[in-house]
Every structure is written in structure tokens, then in C-alpha cells.
Amino acid sequence: MEHIAQDTLLFFSKQPAALPLYGAFERTLLQRYPGVSIRVQKTQITFSDRHVFACISLQRVKRKAELPNPYLVVTLGLPFPLESPRVAAKTEPWPGRWTTHIVIGSPDELDDELFSWVHLAYDFAKKK
Image (tube, rainbow, N blue to C red; front, side):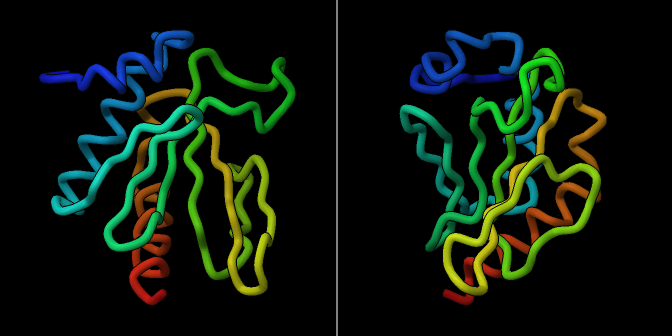
């Protein structure tokens, strides 16, 4: 990765092997949505336009034995429950808003299917 912000390095300090996955995700996302803002927090990195539409975290959404090493969790806010074997967990915290967690374990999983879901979340957030 070209330049890595200090807060991003700190975020991945306990899971440094996941940093290249994050870098690939961020690069692809910023190519598609150049005006997006990125905010590094203690437990997640959020991507927003006017509203948050995607997050990256290292939370455990499956049993440890089921998680790849390294891994990232991509969390998307969607208007419907996403039906895919790639979805690790989903909840409906508010009527008509689904929080969907997808585990990424390799750069190959940062594919067109994933970014089509990111686009759905981006569009959904723009309608708020």
C-alpha cells in the first residue's frame, strides 16, 4: 500500500496480516466512490458519503475455528436481508434496515459480487 494512515496501522496492530486485505478493499472502494470519507474508530473503520454505508471490523461473527486467518468483516446496511452463503450474520436492528456481516479471508473475495452489495448499501444510505 502506498500510504497508510497512522490510525489505520494502529487499528490493525493486533491483526497486521489483515492489513493487505483492508488496503485492497479501501483502494477498490475509493476507485468506485472517490468522495467517500473514512473514519477509523476503536472497533471499526466506517465509510460514508452523507451516511455510513459500509464498515470494516475484526469482530468475530463466526466461531474462531470457522474464521480464515487473516480475515476482515465487511458490514453493510441494506434494505433487505441478503441471502447468500457468504453472509456470516445479519440482523434487522430497525424495520427495513438490515445489518449484514460478510467475512473476507482473501483478496479473491473482494470481487464484483461483494462490491455489488456495497453499491446497494451505498444507494440505500443515500436515500436516508
